[in-house]
Length: 264
Ligand SMILES: O=C(O)c1ccccc1NCC(=O)[C@H](O)[C@H](O)COP(=O)(O)O
Image (tube, rainbow, N blue to C red; front, side):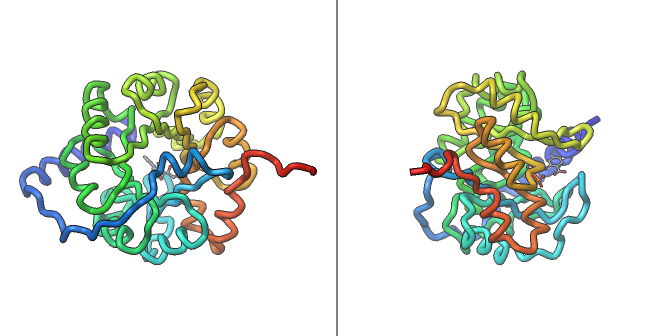
């Protein structure tokens, strides 16, 4: 049994409870014009960063349990993040849906509701709490269910980051029509992180209309350069930013340019 299996078991209980409770959403959020995640990242001249609010994780335990998500999100926005990821899972990451709702009111960047989606009810909830993007993990779902959730999210005007760990999953992501693919460098069985996962899988994606995001284990400018050279246009960074004493510098370091400045 992997950690993903354990998390998904918990999600089944959460979904059953959500359905039992019915739509118990907070007050509707005021309308705000949020830029498209896909367009912004595709058009950027530097690596773009999805900066994550991550209090804790199964692999690391507490990372920054006392963080104020709103203050952290504002720091991310002020210092050049391209999007914000809010981990909303409570049982394993100590996040909440209220974090997402509060962050939505504080910033104008696209926000990823980072959770383990197995049912439409979670997509409706993410939308109601202010998400612009949801995550679908290929390893978590049979292909038909994945496709159905993908289409449902798109019909609700949400962008979808489809996460893969290997070649088979990448094929599935392409088959369901994903235009934003996250390559997760973390092996969910061993928790080991290897940027070679991005290197190997990105190599298999020739279509430039696919936006590739390298996820997990990014710490240094060298890491950012490595995955940029593999074909990633964006990074999903949690722990490094949550532990950083200088978010401005950390983001600046990771925003590597796509082409070297001309000598002339
Ligand atoms: O981070 C974990 O330990 C983890 C374990 C099991 C499933 C998912 C997990 N992380 C979720 C993520 O995708 C990361 O938070 C995200 O990619 C950022 O990773 P990092 O920069 O290494 O914090």
